[in-house]
Length: 330
Ligand code: NDP
Image 1 (cartoon, rainbow, N blue to C red):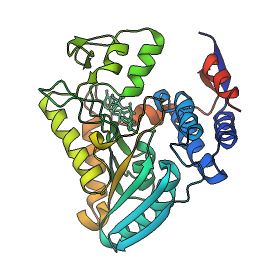
Image 2 (image 1 turned 90 degrees about the vertical axis):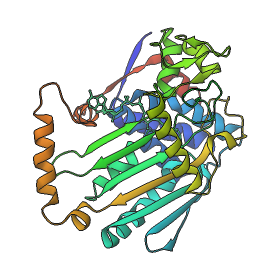
Image 3 (image 1 turned 180 degrees about the vertical axis):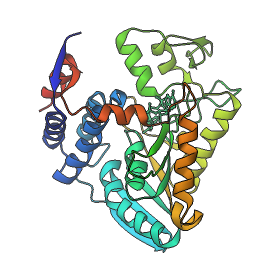
């Protein structure tokens, strides 16, 4: 496998050009390219350039509207609803988050739902955008059903990620962002591409038997992390991202997502103002707690690895075959 070196700017420009050439309008292409290039910048490779062929396939076969103009409404003072109009999630999120932040600063807590969108990315961009505004954020999104609940061997959940961010004084925020499956699907796909097996406990093959072969798991079912506990959190994500948004449960996604593109669905974002809720001294107390936590030998804060990667403003090393594939989509 040979490598190619591209700057973050070059990654952004390549992704934007590929999307423009395949049916995205300028605002959607730029929003998705920001999401993809920031994933590469932070070393979150499974949601970087690797995803672009999937975005393109969904544009080409008409599953997703590349020129969708999100509609932002505020049904109550604490509730922002963004109808993504069958478009990719990044533009819908960029349009709605400023309104959500305004509401949370005023009221202490506010919620935003995104409906009829196609989320194919990590969740940290949206919760980190809230932390950049001095707010804490929680986000959940569901997915087409690819994961069995604890005790079962039939898929009903998506890999249902959950993320939160907490703002810090003059430091990168605490940001945790994780699939509720034992392994994110993108990581399984990368393992399949690299011909690697995965540790036991990640999934079952199509025959319902435990497997360490990523190809067998991708055509069988994934499993939640942490047994019944992860399964309960995956259920919470379904309730928040589908019940509370009015969008689809993972097992109601009837679209064929075997084209490798994103599934349709809903997302929920909850924003809290630590200052309004916890009082003036809350940040000082939080900083002291986080310092005590990270002073324990062997402990690091979630998000710190990604933020460390971000400090490197040099070129990123990419798989040459993937970059060639993207250039072939121009
Ligand atoms: P990881 O297991 O890689 O990481 C989960 C979180 O744990 C990260 O915030 C990470 O921080 C933190 N972390 C990792 N190691 C440590 C450690 N030693 N100490 C403290 N914190 C640590 O994530 P997943 O593989 O589960 O998920 C990958 C991505 O996939 C997520 O971004 C998720 O949103 C995305 N996803 C998207 C879906 C979609 O439908 N759109 C579906 C499922 C997943 P750090 O970043 O600093 O390492």
